[in-house]
Length: 154
Ligand code: FES
Image (cartoon, rainbow, N blue to C red; front, side, top):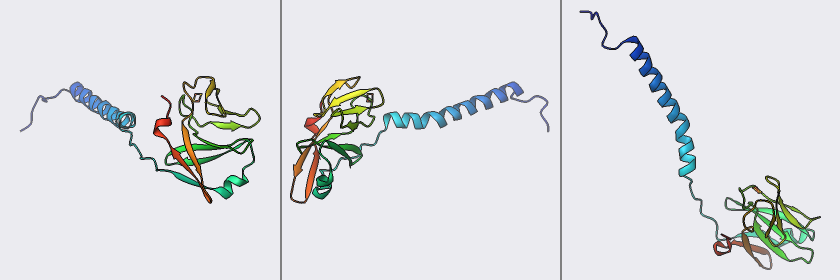
């Protein structure tokens, strides 16, 4: 037996098809966005990282070297007097990486013209707070660098 009238009009069928397709597209695009925004996996930081003293001795005075601390970028500064200072290399504005400018003795963030002095203090541009500081513990063979949660400026 054949129905003379369909239970669903052609217009309803295509409207439903279009609606279902748009809902699937929204889910396909929206799910990764929502997951990225609200489901960031926190990777634990290491207790410390070591940098060979031989590498540090090779650094010229008033220069910087970059290292990784878990998933954080770090920067080790050797001042003109040989003092070692370590900071998170992430700009405190929007997390771009900073670079050391020896001629100015400042850290520079190219994203929005942010500046930090050689103590990590924010001195110009949009960064709202100083750079996060790592502790440095020189040893015979290695320098141990540790992230200090309490040193994180708020
Ligand atoms: S991210 Fe560094 S100044 Fe904006």
